[in-house]
Image (cartoon, rainbow, N blue to C red; front, side):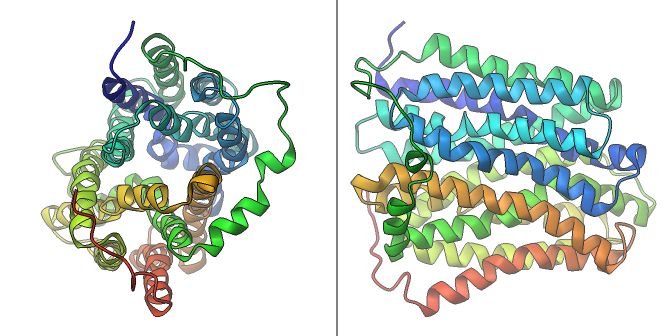
Length: 414
């Protein structure tokens, strides 16, 4: 079945939505497993971080492979890995250490689908509209994670936590089938001759050094890292935070904590797409700095809102979600368009590696600060935990503006 190259994007968006259904499974069952397995907040955060650790281990290899073979092949392997990690959680996980392993395997699976999925598009779309395709692809991260919260919450309330992982494992398998059936292989294999991957291909240190020497490209990478610390820590702990708000107020909200988290997550999708359009008009660096500072204010205000009316908590959580995501597509599109062609693949790999490195540390930092300042039953502990994750964006803005990151930027009107 053949489609015009621009028609591949809807299939990749559907595939990505399915592949991401396992993203929030653990966030939804975090408090359940914390009570059942008697975990500390740090241990709970480390299990969430294991997902991003697996991603970081796999993404250099996955991106190196996409320079050698059709990214479609890498995507299929990633789908299988993610499904195995989720099924392992469902059938075999019974304590902190087993959960670490299977969540890492799940994360490695996402590494085999997320950036390779973007590479599938960039290899097949050769028009000037690529940045907008990228914006939609990155924005649909919010669609997949939003459905992950909703579906995982429904399954948890109906069947229990093991069924959450077991049934959600069908998501990456569906993504695999979509790519297998509807995305044609490249007409010419990228690599001619004997196939071999060297350590320098997986970790192209020399190319990464060149990327980091480019002040514009490296700024987008460091900005993405600060962005993901806040984004993934917030998404890992938001359900637990809503549960704490309900405990403090003594009032139940119209929606369950998981449904509320899922609905709020969807606001990130238009925020990312519209944010990219605003950035094209006023300048990417300027927009990123505005968004990061505003997001930090919303995050701290949200943490301090416990005990307040639900409408205020929901409004602040929605604002935080919107501004966390408002620079997501801008950061990725900025990196893709600013990196020099001969190091673009290495730049995308480093961008993803460092970005999900933020995801690795974010949830663990959040849980560690909760333990350090009291517990997840103390309001001031939640405030300090949110401060610990939003501060990175503020520090990034201060550093980059002092070093002239946006001084030579120009508006892109197309």
